[in-house]
Length: 218
Length: 274
Image 1 (cartoon, each protein chain N blue to C red):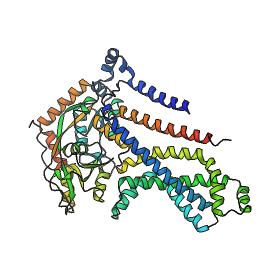
Image 2: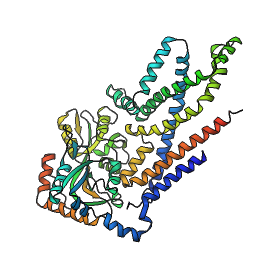
Image 3: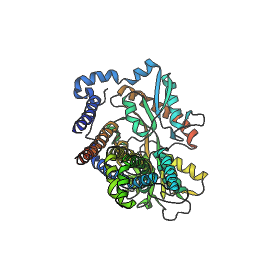
């Protein structure tokens, strides 16, 4: 191929890439934190004995896992806008990612909770612990350890999926890349830089997670 | 884990080296480039011309209900095919794959309402202009705060990412808060659903929409006028010469103005120096 990469034309825009990266990381972190919380609540509800809660959680999880994230984001942004419910691009992106991520982590935590031996729960009951104490001190800490690897995968996918936010005009990393590309028309160079940035962050996530997982070994 | 980081980074590195290829040895590269880059010869030999057009930007280029491409740019592509006496294949392209499509010979020329800015001319080669487009803001008919384009300062303005509206609104009104969308349809929907107070697009598009939708109005005369050119890849000099000559003839004979008027309903803007 006779194409010559010229990075010098892209370098003046490096700060825009970093701005975008900051926003992508922020979106992913908020999505993960709030989504995980929703996931835990969903998992507790669906492993409980309350039929109605089980049903509601089940519907929520199925709806959000079986529809594309892009469509969800469009619905929150353009769809609500048509009914005059105005939320900013950023909030609609985060809302979609949180709810989407909540559904996925819900399933992950459900598996984690179910993987904790029932003997643990029975022992806690026998010791006179309340349901809350049982969950908070016995079940959740053990379940958490089991779900770290799938949760890490979910965090990485979430970070990569945050690029969908560019379609609702959030100036995150992909959006900034496309912008720099349109100014300079240095497409390959812009995308190589972005690939590198995504790769660095996802690698950091998996390294930190594996160190954290190791700290649990006894 | 560290291994996978190294592996990943080396893949990126290898990819960049592969892409750079013969760029490392300018002397040898230029000789082989001459053969590889001769698009004119390739088009004549294969009897096939691949033209990149926009698939969603009427009246420049769009897909009609039957799925066929139509528009001003598409008609010019057909005329170019006639002049070369070759078959024309219309290839839909979006902003991010313009340059890759040219470099990898997926398209021979881009006719896609593309503005030849100085910055872009460093990475692709532009022909002489064949049209010019002005930019006009569009607001709700009952809007009283935006009376000239300068009033866009501090306002949310929807634009399509990477197009002339994006680049030149930012230049003309740096204080405007641009919200950028992937497609013109998304930017327009964002304006219509109240996500932005104004929408900046090409004058032709805005004037047609305003005429059909009385709930919107255009704001003043075009505040910026930009040239539109064909684009080819770098170092493709023979091909560039051919296209420049083709456009000179097309403009001189009045054929260009005729096709323009067919799609836009009025005479094209004057392309002579101001």
